[in-house]
Length: 173
Image (tube, rainbow, N blue to C red; front, side, top):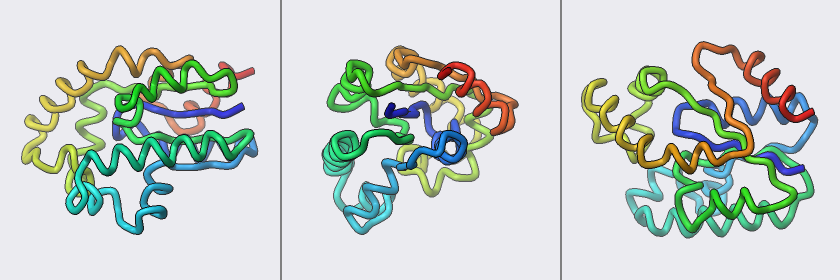
């Protein structure tokens, strides 16, 4: 089985993905890391020098390569990945893919992301926590329906990584 984690930035997709892969003894891939390896630039540098359109095309290309070349794995997507090129719908239609949405309250996301905003191209313009909070609310509203189309949704608010992994594993078996 191919397990794909998605959700808004700051929900812990990479951290949860690595821990889940270790628990299930599956290979782990982080889509942003695979893009960085392929292009030779960080995600932030790709956005700055080549633009979001280039990034989204490369993201889609590498995602499809990962899906075609591996029999089972855990894959963490970027927060926007399911929104482009009908990727969320595409993944949900594949028989060998299980999608898991990691969700969190806006306040959790604001607290997690405020100190990281310089490394995240979509929020680096937010100067205050209030501005970031408002941005996240709007962005989540636009993405909520697709995020919640995942096979499984796990809320991560105030939970340890162990608790999150336990909830996922219980839903899998």
